[in-house]
Length: 201
Image (cartoon, rainbow, N blue to C red):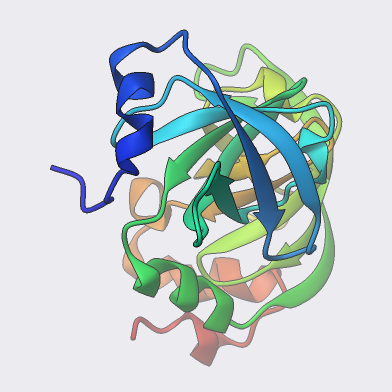
C-alpha cells in the first residue's frame, strides 16, 4: 500500500475518477503558483489541469481547499493543459537527485521509441551520472521509455521520462538496460563528466 496519507476530504475523488477538486499548485523549482483542478485521484497520484500547467517543472506542492499544509508531489509528464502527477512518498529520492553533480553540455541526440518507429532530434543541455535534461520539439508524442542515440556513444542508451513538456524533458538514464558496468565511465566521459564521478556509491 502507498505511504501517502490521503486527505479525508478527497475520498470522494478516489471513488469517482470523473469528480474534480479546485486546488492551488506551488512549484518548488520555479516558485510558480497556479490555480488548477485535480481529477483521476488515487493513492499514487492524480491529474492536474490548468491553462498554466506548463509553468510547472517537477517538484510541486498541492494545496487542497481548507488544508494548512501542501501535499508534496512530482510532475511526470505534461500534455496540453494536463499534467500527470505522482505523490511523493520518499524524501530521499528527491534529495539524492538534487545532490548529484550536474554538467552543462550541448550534445546532439536522437530520441526514439524502443521500436524505432518515432524519432525526433534534440540536444542534451544538462547531464549527470543518472540523468539529463533534453530540449527537443514533440517530446510528448513519445512513450515513457525511449532510446537515446548520440554520436560519441557506441550504442543507444535506454532512458525514461521523469518529467516533460512539449519542448523539454528530464530523463533518467537506465544504464543497466544497455551497458555493461565497466562501460559506464566511457559513456559518462563523453557527456563531460570525470570518470571518478561515475563510480557507484
